[in-house]
Every structure is written in structure tokens, then in C-alpha cells.
Image 1 (tube, rainbow over the protein chains, first blue to last red):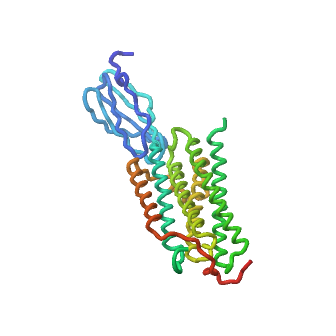
Image 2: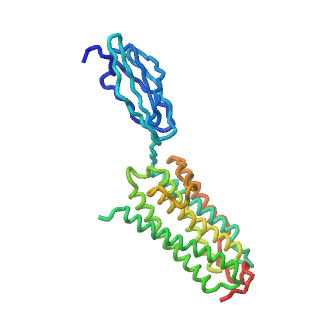
Image 3: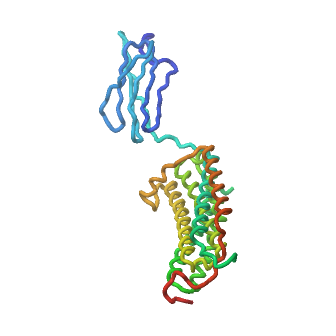
Length: 140
Length: 204
């Protein structure tokens, strides 16, 4: 491999998943790269689009991929170049899925018990307010 | 060793079966209340069957809840359907407990008094509905389909309060229950004075 081959920095890893409805900003760290083009496409379309890139600093670039409203895969690749060489990366897959559902079970249990007690309170209140006939003289 | 999932099936079928039968008996007893001047044997059978079923269901439902939590795959309750199942189960427990309290306090003659019969029937049917919804959500969770069809869609979302808000709601709920029990007029055993509901002479 030529020493000046444009490439991603060692240790850089692509993002592979995201939540539905979230735009994704990907920061790329490169070495020996003067110019960078990012292409992306959705799984259902063969049209390849070009992402708008912003150079942040020395060899650091970022771009934003649009949000997805359905569970799907989006793929993207980068074309890195310098005056001498050009390198095209393989397609990276970014999958969109529903956000994970995580709940505090203790909070849920308290909330559920509270709901049960409240339902009982409302039902008993209805019974006491509407159910019993008015008494005819004293306690039964 | 028998898994929690197996126990959950047994406990669930017991709870849902008894509560469903209770709901059917409550509905039938309510209908008969509107038709009979004097309670028939069928009415008495409906009343006592519903009472036994509610007690049996209330005994088995906590086991269904506990085994359901233990049998949940993954790290626990990681699905809004399971969250809503838990909430509705406790609402069912609360409503059936209130139904049992009313039936126990007012006695079997409550069915011969129009307001008591309607309120008691309404509470029983709503409670039964909540338990049947829980059962239907179980089918939605495990098989992806439900008898509720598109009506189950809202139950795929949940409103989760945090621990602090849940504790506050619990305190408010307990305060409400204590207030109702302490401040509102007590229920008492209703004596039979002729049916204020029915017009026909269907008697035993």
C-alpha cells in the first residue's frame, strides 16, 4: 500500500445504527486526503446522491444523512483523493430502527399499583354516591 | 425445572377464564334484574357464580402478573405492550376489588335496586373489559395479532411516569381511597323490598 494513499484514520469506525426520525451526522477522520466526496443511497432506491460535506479541520470532515421514517437501511461510501491517488471505500450500512424501549420496572410497578388503587377509589366512590338507596331511619 | 412462562400460561388462563365467566354472569344478572320482580334461581346462580369467579380471579391474577414479569424475554419489560398490560391488570384488580367490596357490602339484593344494579354491573363489565384487553394484548405481543384489530394500536404506546411522579400518583391514589372510605356514606346491606327494576312477573 502506498504511504500516501488517502484513507480513513486508524481506529475510525463508521456508525452502523440509529433511531427512526433522527438525522445522523457522521464525522470522518482522514489521512493524506485533500478531497472527499460522500455518496449515499437508500436500500429501496438505486439513485445515488451526494452528501454535502463540511471540512472541520485538518483531515476531519462531517456530513449529515437525512432521517428515516421507516425501518430501513441506508448505505454510503466515500471517495477520498489527493493529487496522486484516489480511494473508494466499500458501502457502509446505516440501519434505522425504532428507539429501544427501556423502563424502570420499579417505577412501572408503583405506577400500576397507583392506577389500580385509583380505579378502586373511583369505583367505590360511585358505589357510595349512587348505589345505595337512602336509608329509612338509622343504621341497618 | 418448569419455566416461568409455563406457570404464566396456567395463571393467565385461570385469571382470564374466571374473570370472563364473572363478566358474563354479571351481564346476565344485570339483564335479569331488569326483567324479574323476584330473583329466580338463575339470577341467584349468576350472582353467586360471579362472586366465586371474581374471588378466584383476584387470587390468580397476581400470580399471572408475577410470572409474566419473570417470563418476559430480554432484560424485562422492554415493550410498551407489556407496560400497558401491567397497568391494565392492576386497573382490573382495582375494579374487581371494588366490585367485590360492593357485592359483599350490599348483599345479593343489590340487584333488585336500580342504581346499585347499574353501578355494580357497570363496574364489573368495565373490569372484565380491562382484563380481556390485557389478554388480547398478550396475543398481540406473542403472535403479532389481536382480536381488537386496529383498536389495539393506541396500546402500542405508553405514558411512562418516572419514579418520583409514580410515587406522587401513588400517594394521591391512596389518599383518594382513604378519603372515599372514611368520608363518604358507608355501603350497607340492601334488604329485598320488591324489584325496582323489572316490570314483568317472571318469578321462580
